[in-house]
Length: 273
Image (cartoon, rainbow, N blue to C red; front, side, top):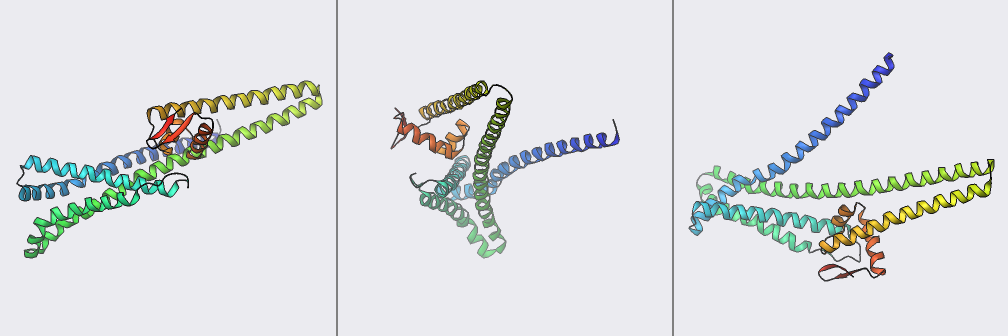
């Protein structure tokens, strides 16, 4: 082994280690971000539970459980609002719009409830000692944490959908290049030998490729029907993840199945005919 080969091998190993470290770092950061969004609720839960004890005469346990439930519901409300916003931004004109306004109003109500429950006890104290105004920073931090966690989840879904679409485009380009190479090889071979025989082989090869592609397409259509049988109200993003294709391909499959009379959309979602 010469110096150049040794250097190339070391360089390749460094690249692999760097990619592995980057993947581990991204995984750890994702876990920390999700954990931090819930840890950030601890001061808010503590302060709101004290208000519930004082206002509603609840036991400490009942007040704590009630406030934990409030934060969980609030996280779900904000996440639903972000999903509705993302859906309305990417939906087709024929798709029904999501109630983004309702999600936004419910999110505001959730954050307002936190501010009010904390402010009831802390504002009178702050009027005497201004240091108690700092308690209102906790629900403000909760607003930032909740919105950013929901946005991070939405971005993850967008990136996953983009990766699927890019992989499908790359597979199509590779298939096209391979088909072109096969055509060129077959044409060259036909000039050097029996053209009729080579043309027949090429036709058979293309027919086999078409049948193979059609079989794969039929399998994906059957997978989509099976998925909608168990998940009739699933959206295009969930269906795309389940079938392994892009959202646009899901729309194409839906139209094809509807035209064939195998799939029908009703008020409750998709119905298998």
